[in-house]
Amino acid sequence: MSQFDKWITRRTRRLARLTSRRGFLNRIGVLLVGASAIPLLPMARAAAPEQYQRPPLPGDPAIDTPEGDPENCNYWRYCSIDGAISSCCGGTPRSCPPGTEMSPVSWIGTCLNPADGKHYIVSYNDCCGKSNCSRCFCFRNEGDKPVYYPGKSNDTVWCLGKAGLVYNSTVAVVLGVATEEDR
Image (cartoon, rainbow, N blue to C red; front, side, top):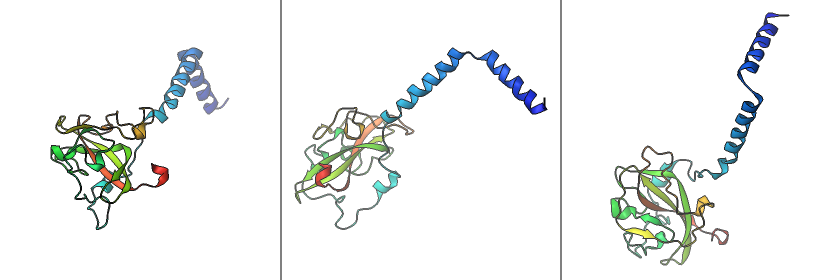
């Protein structure tokens, strides 16, 4: 028998002495259950959060319309918001207040802009890192789905994977014009 065969035989027998079939089946079961939970994790909506921080271009729907007050719950972008408005906490409708960080995961809604009569896809990102702002709290649920539809549920705190898991406020970033399929 070669040295390699002897080494493999020793390792295999040692492994057999230290483990049992039940223990092995237990580990496989845990692995399978854990793998089945992967689809329940939040979805990353942005490859890079910096894309939300770009300056608006002329004619871009991300530019605030003169219609409405961004510090009011009835502002057109906030049709599916659930939380404190970033504008009231030191930020803008599309940027987080100083000292907070925008979550890379979000929920989405489709809102009607009364200024041009078009529907827009709006991404709602939580701002994380500082204590809760608790000013201008809005609870609007147009198009909200149950929590098992994570991409369209506003009942989850999306401060996952950030340095600070503390929720502060929510921004409403316009992603683009909605089609009939998006509504």
